[in-house]
Image (cartoon, rainbow, N blue to C red):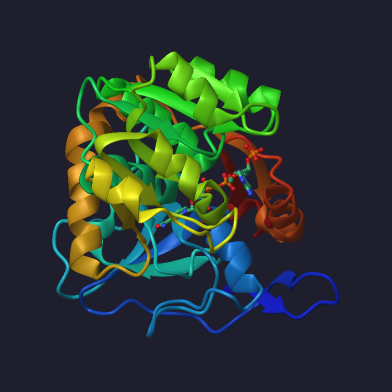
Length: 329
Ligand SMILES: NC(=O)c1ccc[n+]([C@@H]2O[C@H](COP(=O)([O-])OP(=O)(O)OC[C@H]3O[C@@H](n4cnc5c(N)ncnc54)[C@H](OP(=O)(O)O)[C@@H]3O)[C@@H](O)[C@H]2O)c1
């Protein structure tokens, strides 16, 4: 089969679509012909050698895919060759084929393209996990979603809105703010021009928010803690703004705050199956019905993965950047 190979380059890793050894599925897996996958920040880090896959998992990049089942392990029941499916992956998505545990699969609705399917798994499951399981977001609460124009952000705004929460976001470009308002953000702030802490405090009459979904980390830590109400939760999912910050513990104790670090990829298979099932139960009908929708910025053929990574690295996308696999042959 073909897959993306990573080689060291002068300025950035060199990514190319090459022949690699074929794979097979185990008895408790299905083999899927990948038709579309998508770029995640983790792929950029992995390509630079900074984020290795969990032990025992594929070294090939790619945390999600949509495709059609090509082979079925002997112990697997209830699946047919040709079933159109999507799933998060621990790795291996930037390839023509990938082996997946069948309980990780979500059926692709008949009217959806593989490109639309590949825009779902990683960011929708991440947003769902961290807003509703880790963040315990309730109807009537207020949530701040940083990087609102990101894949995770655009999914999170829609689910939080449907759950009856008031959504505030930050982003760094006017078109991203506009998109987030359209998805349901009640307040969209440009963090490059506005002090999000001051603006949200004004908007909430000094109350602050119940939950913050934060991929920024160090640079926002103290503003985030100041922004939280009593019993507020800060769920950190990334470190785009640095790893370190000095913290005033009095804010945590004085307001009974919780700071939660949360990773999806490294969780045990059974946890990922449970998260997938809970997401399906709560939000899949809304996605199928079009009430909430995947947000796709650009589609690249997988042969142009180098350009796709550069596009994401430069923060140009609002929503997902998809890699179409069948287009490359
Ligand atoms: N923990 C997990 O399990 C998990 C899973 C999936 C994703 N993630 C993380 O969640 C984050 C979002 O992922 P994604 O795929 O949705 O990302 P994405 O679509 O690539 O968007 C990320 C956006 O973050 C903003 N950003 C970048 N650097 C920033 C900084 N220093 N300060 C503030 N904003 C910054 C940029 O938008 P602006 O133009 O608005 O600056 C950028 O477009 C990433 O950090 C990713 O690693 C974590």
